[in-house]
Length: 114
Length: 145
Image (cartoon, rainbow over all chains, first blue to last red; front, side, top):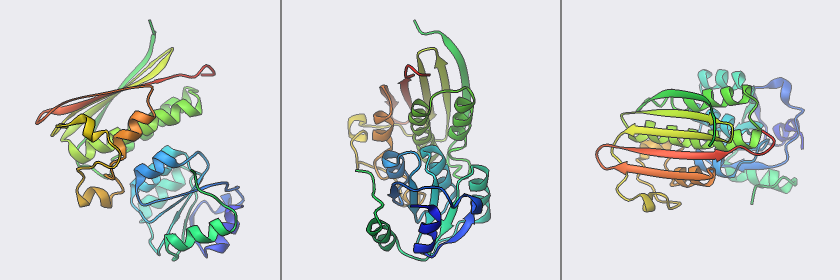
């Protein structure tokens, strides 16, 4: 699935990486725990989290995920968005809660890592 | 005997959450520029990042030393902090002594040390309560490095 389709399905606002929406998403990792992301994410996964501090993007960079979506209406501050741009990680935000996001994406064929 | 190719030492400041993770980010860029393969690099930086977060969360200060040889990547992380009374217990997944503040930062769910061990080929912790903790991790370079 293209990131642009994910954006439409989840009614996301794009905060960084507007030109990267054509990338393919194969798997998803979703958690507010950064160690869980680090433990389970594979390179190129889409990361869903409600944690909006600078460590969320550092974790995304270290884990090598392809893009980050912030859930439940949370928005990171400018410094975090700038850091994501520097690391070339697209960042999106949606008002949906994590459970609904995972259900929608799972229903469209995306899977987690097991 | 492995030949040492590079040694870099970094300072880590305890309790500075804004900078937490910066050292690991620097190490990632350094190793990528050296052409270390993606799989070994990823394992090393996950160990580095978890270790760095632990130093920031628990210790007053610490150092991280990266040693690259022709055979492996090595990390030595030494901190001045509270130490770990029971290392076997600390290595159990789910065991955590983190505060609510640490959990709000996305860490402290009892996965950090197990993650570090899982991503290392050799992993050792030494700790003295009231003094500090040292972590040694080795990641062998795969044949295509």
